[in-house]
Image (cartoon, rainbow over all chains, first blue to last red; front, side):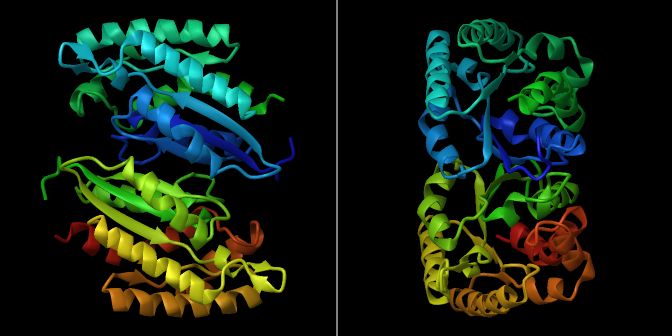
Length: 202
Length: 202
């Protein structure tokens, strides 16, 4: 890979993609981008995470927002990460039913294939609420299956972060959902091996 | 201002807003966001800079992209910065004529007022091309007038960065347009006083 290549990675998702809670304003996305630079594969990282976005919201906007950031001749890739907001209670249900979240993910993967964008999916992380974490764990498992079927790499982070005091303590000390700098560093560490292999492939 | 307030700042613009060239992937936007956090006024920073975008491109997309990032009850503000790409040669003209760039800025300021978004405008910085810099300097002056008329704060950065080896050397050593980490730090330093006063007002 030529070091001067125009590599663009679109990170589409929710507040975790936006790095909410990180006083350094880098989140896991900025940390991964910095590490790509450090190994000689600099990227333009477009962080398109939006607070409170469910998979419904992301499905609606992702294609337009990515389209205006593409460029002829550039090497382009898509990272997708969502799910926590889908599992948030809304009345006696959740904001998005699990089977619908899966259908949304499947649609996005199909649209990305049509748009010739290689995709990496990062699973939803745990929050400070036990009941919601059960739903996130179940969704994480469904997303893993969906990605395996579509032959798209999937990084599950839920279980590792759930047993990681560095994540759970920062989330509890924060707003109950988002970590601070150290937590985002842990999330970046989990994604990094798959991320680097995927980024440098092809 | 309550420290727990939901403050969102939308940064709309070009590759300088995206922080292209910064190996730390923070750019001037990330540095300003970090400084806001450090003084106890944390923000959610949505960086909506797109490489190669002219004022025509930005006018077309800014309102939709900001709209899906707004939230009821949040304190919301808009930072706008563009101009360098407008002055790039295209055939025997430039990509956007200066009077049209000014009209685009005026339209965006009007739309922002209608959307009840306080605005701060950051002027275009110098690049490594002498002829283009003459056009950027002229546009910088027009933008300053336009913002004064609209009573919107404007931070001119061109002249200060043009005589700043820390900026010009990094730009020349890079791709001819973008600095690296130190240059973005200098740009953030220039914007910071106006930025903090504007952010904490109202």
